[in-house]
Image (tube, rainbow, N blue to C red; front, side, top):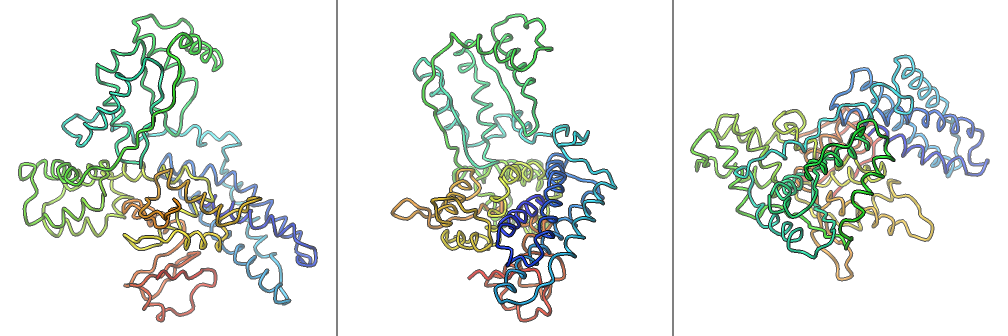
Amino acid sequence: MAETAVLFLIDKLIPLLTQKATLLQGIHGEVAEIKDELESIHSFLKDADARAVAEEEMSKGIKTWVKQVREAAFHIEVAIERYLLHMAQQSHQRGFTGDQIIVQKIKERSEKYSFKSTSQGSSSGAQNVRWNDPQKDSLYLEDADVVGIEAPRDKLINWLVEGPFHRIVVSVVGMGGLGKTTLVKKVYDRQIVRGHFECHAWILVSQSYNIEDLLKSIIKQFCEARKEFPLPGIDTMDEQSLINILRDYLRQKRKSSPIHVYELQPLTPNEPWELFCKRGFQFDFGGHCPQVLEKLSHELVDKCEGLPLAIVAIGGLLSTKDKTILELQNLQNSLGIELQRNPHLSAVNKILSLSFEDLPYNLKSCFLYLSMYPKDYYINCIKFIRQWIAEGFVKEIEGKTLEEVGREYLTELIHRSLVQVTRVKFDGKVRLCRLHDLFREIVLQKMKGLSFVHVLSKQESNFKGLTRRMAVNRVSYSVLKLFKDPPHFFTFIVQS
């Protein structure tokens, strides 16, 4: 995410370099130097971010270096804003020499400690990281451990088996953790489906994959399904040869038709409770929740909002704890932290985080910004789109207004199942939206580590850490008057 801060800053420097010479007043060289240094640093950051996602950890040295880059980016961004303000007021400004030196030192430090970028072929680069795909666990769930899958499973089977005799493409879409992989695997494993097709293959494409290995696996599974011997020499074939074999193999098979899209929905109201009790009390009370714990247990289930992965994970964590009111209260109050550090919840954290990590950098900033709103808050779309614009997150596109581009950003976040629509206007535009509770918990923890924003709580009377923004809502607004000498580089954002 430090990569995002740097790319955002580079985007700010580029238009500054194109301004008239009278505006730059002798600092053009300094700005250009900072931009070049940041572009050089960017490749290192891209690799560091990728490794952080795949390995879940970075070395202490790289973490310190990334933190320094992020802080330097914040300081330079503020310096640019101050410079432009002073120039608009025709006031003197000293330039960016100090910031330029800071960036150079950070780059030198990365070279001193041999931080390698992906483009330099590091043995620890993202493409060589061993990826532990969290979706694999869902492939081995027993039918007894799954609820609410019957209707969508039967729908997909009907499309595959009862439909017209031609090749079809079926896409299952929905928010991370809904059970898409589990559903599709249950359909694939049904004999009525496998027996309906001459050949079949199951391929799981993770964040880190090799296209040649995927093609080889498909061909081998096709041969196995037809009870044929594996093709000689397949393990040494290159990508193009493998593609040619598959094309020839499938050429005489069924003709294509339009794509079917199945949008998987959260569990219905009664199903989450059944699943939670089955997991949470599997070793106690015969799989049933005792009456004294029902209120707190229902509150935990409600946080999951029908997300099977989260219900199973949180229920599994509860099964390891004492079944007391105090334990459930502690779990509920520290759920955000537990999602980050508890191995029982690592799959939830990783799968939901994947959706965020896959975003382009400008959409990452937009999504993080949404997480500042309070829990269960219905967010006014036009209001926060204008906030995105004011922050500089929305890029200009010729022929479109910034609000139109911001709408496109929002639409993409919705299509990626990161934002939930709660109200639509008569013209079809989204009026109100919200974030899933667990997404918000995860992103709030991310924001603390990234110094992107600090959400002020009503218990705080001061803040001494580093943050680029501070969000204040109704419950915490009264503590603002207690702040003395706030850091000069953050922006207050007051949510009504």
